[in-house]
Picture 1 (cartoon, rainbow, N blue to C red):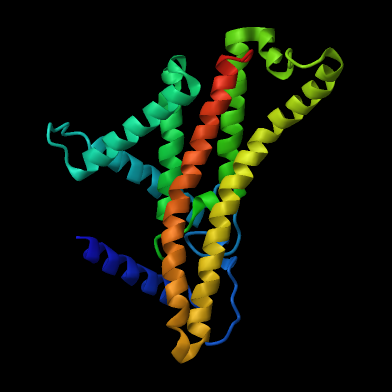
Picture 2 (picture 1 turned 120 degrees about the horizontal axis):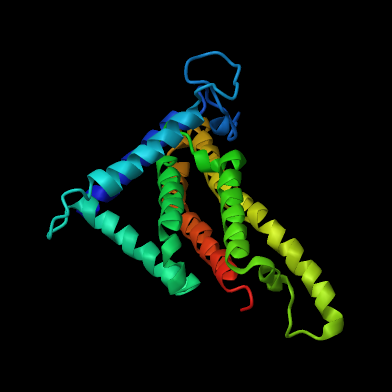
Amino acid sequence: MGKIFLYVALAAVLLSGLIFAPEHAGLAIHPTDQFLVKPLFGGDHVAWYTPTNVTLWLALAVAAIFALLVLGSSARSIVPSRAQSVAELAYGFIYKMVEDVAGKDAVRFFPYIMTLFMFIVTANFLGLIPMSFTTTSHFAVTGVLAIAVFVTVTAIGFALHGVKFLSLFWVSSAPLPLRPVLALIEVISYFVRPVSLCIRLAGNIMAGHAVLKVFAGFAAGLSIFGFLPIFAISAFYALEVLVAFIQAYVFTILTCVYLKDALHPSH
């Protein structure tokens, strides 16, 4: 089974190298072309209502999540199928994360955090398919996710604690003369959170895909020696699979940390 998976992975890498490589031999590589937003039905003009490749792959991500979590686990068998096993594994993994990081009182927000993780990890993995479009490589997508987390966590903090939520920025354990300075630093770091979340996710995904495109371009440009970059592509592709999961995990666990601050601002 392991050998079959290895052969399939290598075939996918070779196929991606052929697909993403330049049309003509040479080293005229344009790694950012894969991130261009294009209308689905021709033309160059993109309006707010225009269906684009981003729209398509966002919809596919939602459909894949629905297929896994709803259709894949609808049988609720005692001996689970593969889809049900993956769904149960994801459920248990995120539930345990929320409970351990944010506390048991944060479990009521588990559906929101589970939705975040499943969307990001699914979009990341779909972006590794040859000829696909990685929606999480765009700051417009990751920015909306980050702002949603920021607004939600802030609203929860004020809804539960009112003005006392501002104690999050007041370091009472520090010497009194330093407290105003530390409060200013805490306020700045708090409002930088969505920027950090947005850039970290999109930047890592974009960088990885750009490097894959560069190596694929080398494979085409080196003619009979084009097999040499294939080994680098194979290794980097495996790394990108790991990064796709890790970035979803990091985004989710930071959301749990921010949620903990909202639930317990004095801690």
